Every structure is written in C-alpha cells, then in structure tokens.
Image (cartoon, rainbow, N blue to C red; front, side, top):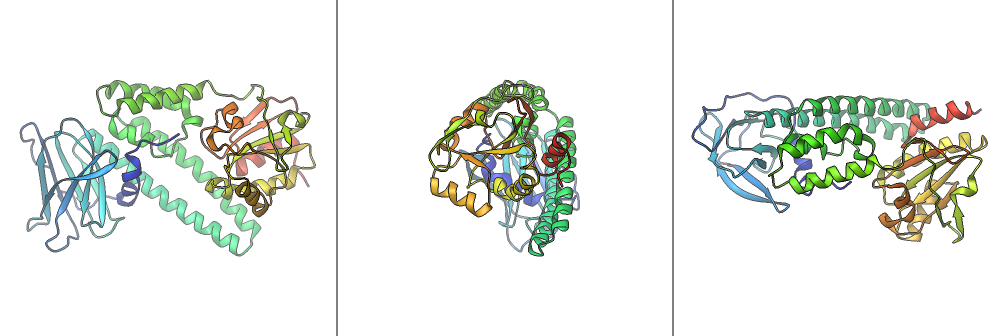
Length: 386
C-alpha cells in the first residue's frame, strides 16, 4: 500500500528527532482562540532562529520564525483552520514533526544534532505523537545494531553467527509488532494515530483485522478533515484485503512464461508442497531474504517441496540477472508487467515480498512466511531434513 503523500516529506524527520525528554518547560496558559507553541533549546546556535513550516501540497512551506530569549526559549503564536501536521526546524539540524491545533503546545529540544532529545506535550495528539516517534527511534536503533551484526557475520562467513542474528531479528520483529500495536491501540482517533498507521510498521494486508476498527474510528473523528478522502481510501483497501485469499482457500492458477519463454502453470506442480514467492530484482527486502530462501530450498527440495517464483520485474535482463546473482535454482515465471502482473492480481498482492504456501492438493496452508518461520513450518510439515 502506498503511504500518504505527506509522509515522504517528514517520515525521516520524525525518525531522526524522536528521543528521550529534554529539559522541560511548561506551556503558558491558553490565550484566546489560537495556538501558542513554547519551548526551550538545550544547545542553541548564536543568532539562529527556529522556523515553523507547514506541510502543504507535499512541500514544506515557511509559516513563521522566532528567535530565542536569554533563557534559550522560543514562542510562536497564531491560528490554524484545522489541526494539521507542521514541522519545527531548528537551524536545519534538528527537525520535529508536530500536530498543530489552536491550543497550547510545548516542544523542548536538544537542537544540536538530528537525533537529539525531544519532549512534546500540551494536547492528546502531541502526547500520542511523542510516544510513537520515541518508540520508532529506539526500535530503529535496535534493528540497526542487529543489521550491523548480520553484515559482520556475512563478512566472516559464519553460518552459525548469521543464523543467530536472524533469530534475534525475527524475535525483535515479533516484539516490535506487539509493542507498536499496543501503543496504537491506546492512542486517540485523530492525526497522530493516522500518522502511526502510515509509518510502514503495520502491514495492512496482514493486519487488516486489527486495523479496520481503528480506521473506522479515525474516519468518524476526521470526517471533515483534509485527510478524509485518503482515510476513506485506506479503509476501502482494508476491506479489499479482508476479501483476499485466505488460508484454507484453493490457490488460483498462475500460468506465465518461464525464463525460456515457455508457459509454466502452477498446477503442473500439483502433488508437491509449493511456496509461491512474489518478488522482483528491484525489491531490496526480497533480495535480502533470498539467501534464506536458497538455504531453505536446498534443505527441503528433495522432500516433495518446490518454489514457484513470480517476478514483478519489467525488464527480462534484470529478472534473469537477479536469478543468476542470487543463485535461485527453482521454478520462475513472469509476464514482466510490474504491479500489473496477472499473477499478482490473482493473489491480490500489493506489496512484496509476499508468499503463499500451498499443499499437494493446491490449498493455501500459510501466508507470508519468511526466514525462521518458513523453515519451522516446513520442518513441521516435511520433517527435519538431514
């Protein structure tokens, strides 16, 4: 699923700026019907100003600027027509996403580095945004550390080291998902919760049952918002996912050209356990997962198991090049139609990698298994290979 357009602008801003609380100051008492933003900068730059930007038409538009007083504090005052996403820019070093409405807000920052500490408060939306961005920054740091371990294991060609890090990553993904869902469930319906759903942490295709009631409440609370149309579209896609192929259903036929230009049907593999693997040469996560798939395939290929790779590539040379480079020795097909692939349409695939495991009778028995979870499922079905 495509994320809302504004995220392309401020997604990395938020990841960079979230952190533990800085030295806090309290907001002033409400003044009139507008907003008041107050805050303190721990490490200010001489004569530099803090800028307030609005996110408009997928661009950052300057709204106001403010200098710091002798206590390194800044203040913005004004009015907004409706709650919306804005960005506070501290000397082009630290940028902070906020939800601005006609209330009093407090934003305290480090101001010295992109990952400097931030504390936001004043409204339920800001409290929620603080929780989300803080969690995401911490999660990113943990995942980054494990990815570094994975690279070191790959360089040292340590199979045991790689497997150990892979287990850690899988466990972390599961824990991160639980933690993030817990945070989102406790948020109030509104802009901050809508932002959280569009960060990419939750896969709508896999989490539609969890997301549908949340999005329904967001729709009600933001019925007159500028984002109402986007929210309606998101909800409609969740409804589509709810009608998509599920475990227990028969796998639709796929009949596409193989690497030699001959039509290969999925049904020709009937009688085997088959992993349908939707991927592409341009898909980074797919290519990162391929070494795991190769290892698992070599482990179970002699135990009535086959892989049916469906590529969403556009150029045959790219498709074949990736197959050769990644040493993917199983069955491959593609119509080279990118996201318009007939195979992807038949399975409702909207993001990759995506996998479907089918039994010898052509029935779907699992979806979106990767790494350790795929290996565990095959071990359960086929027994541990020697």
